[in-house]
Amino acid sequence: MKKLLLFIGILSLPMVQNINAQSLTFDALPETAELGSAANFTLSYTSDIPVKVGVDLFVFDVDGSGNLTQDWSTWKAGISTDVLPAAGTASAQNITLSIPGNLELSSALASGKTYVWSLTLKNEAGDWITGSQHATTLIAAGTVVNGVHFEGTTAAEVNAGTTVTVAYNYTMLNDGIVKIALSKYSATESWINDVASFIVNPAMATTATPVMATADIVIPADAIPSVELTNGEMYKWEVSIFSPDWASYLSGVKTGVVVNAPLAGLSKNATKAFSIYPNPASGTLHLVGTNVEQVQVYSVSGKMLINAGVTNSLDVSSLAVGLYFIRINNTNVLKFIKN
Image (tube, rainbow, N blue to C red):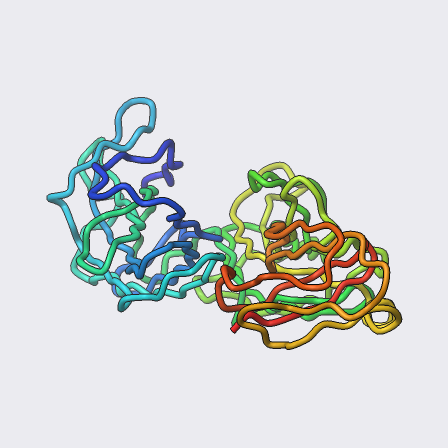
């Protein structure tokens, strides 16, 4: 079997129109996929126009440095969402692509060839806006690979001081280590540290059938709430597998999560001095309380969207529909919904 090739760089395609505020990101991509199986993708997009999100499978050339050379004539399979509404904050989309069972295995491809996931964001007419390409490996059904995934849906929002159960599954060629963690990442998505973790050591080698398990993650009561993180930092759930003694990282996936203040502390602070109305709000959000010196609005990913001084009302009409946090005087944190 060919060794999985790491994606290096993003291929460029001509822009069909000059549009701002479009982006397409992902939490994890399938490192391998079995012929005849279904590959699952979690993609997030932002856009100021309605769009389509798609995943396609191609065969590309790879040069001696591991760079991918585009060849759009080698399309193998693909799927696209229906037209999605404009989204000012990241909107997650789950896409499942069926892998044809009659394709060649990666190990049977000619030298210098590799399968590639092509992730695309297109306008309503199907014109390309942005995207990226990432090498992957197609294997035969029943092949044991080093892989790990979340099982079901992970909690998108948690409170400090609580215990959260995370379900996962993994396969490993040899005995190793499994780590399930709540971790902090930088704005560029570089790992900073584990806030809480659950370690399985040793984790036994498996057959091609994944081992299903759960881990109870205890969120520290003093964990910094997402709305108080700085410099674009964020939290993510991650599940990873390693070779014995942590010698090598084998595989892993991660997905975003918002950490709130402890329930008791948040309730006490939020009701002691301030309240907001209406909630949900579509235009103006009013603040009830005295001595409002600073007001900040954050997305669920922890990004500051509004930073205001002394005020008792905020114009939130430009925000996309969804859940937001409002922090008053750097201490009181409340939630509101934009509709």
